[in-house]
Length: 183
Image (cartoon, rainbow, N blue to C red; front, side, top):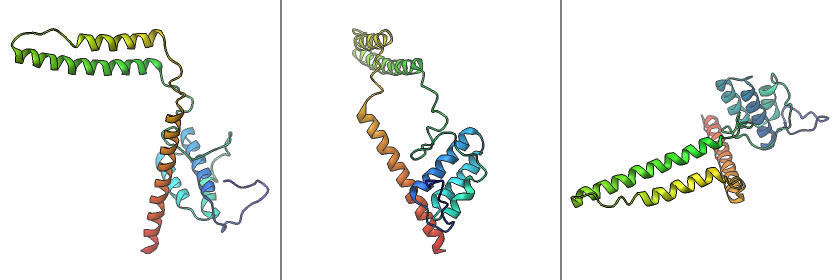
């Protein structure tokens, strides 16, 4: 939790968003370490996000070891467990060739239909765009660009999506909690 080590808050003291996020981060670390199964993680995460006082947060991490590294920011479940794994450049290259093959099928299909409708085979025009596209893919293999990952606009867009997803999840939890109180 986001509290000083020399100050122990009263169990009835209200918890902040930062406190709930810190507990969520510790739970995500425990899930990625194999200390929690998915069902237990989801149960504890739901409880953490709907907690209002420290007394509700403390039992959620009481049986977990303290984190070895400092926890920061909200938890992105899509990134849990992938922090140390880099995508293969070969996979990206083969993905590009799959797109090329899809374009080849579509263009060849259009060429075939127009040739049949004219009654004779016309010039195979798909060779020109497909040849240029293939040349670009091969050039990318020979002369790879390393600056693609440093797009600041893309980074800010991804950060914004993460904040929106986190805010939306908190709203859903609050609505659920309000419905339960009304019953």
